[in-house]
Length: 44
Image 1 (cartoon, helix red, strand yellow):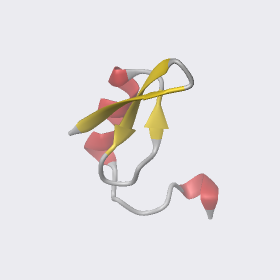
Image 2 (cartoon, helix red, strand yellow; image 1 turned 60 degrees about the vertical axis):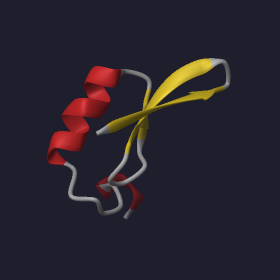
Image 3 (cartoon, helix red, strand yellow; image 1 turned 135 degrees about the horizontal axis):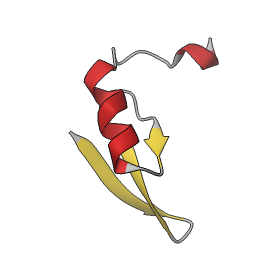
Image 4 (tube, helix red, strand yellow; image 1 turned 90 degrees about the vertical axis):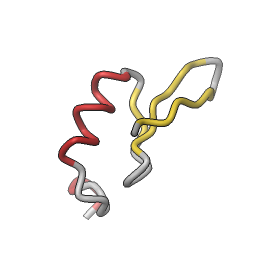
């Protein structure tokens, strides 16, 4: 489930599995469906 949070006067949507934040709830939901709860590949 995507968690909604307020930061910098904006609404952000956070993946509860890995903590990655999105400015679009749709993007966050799509990410979370395929999230493996590990660090995102671009951080490796």
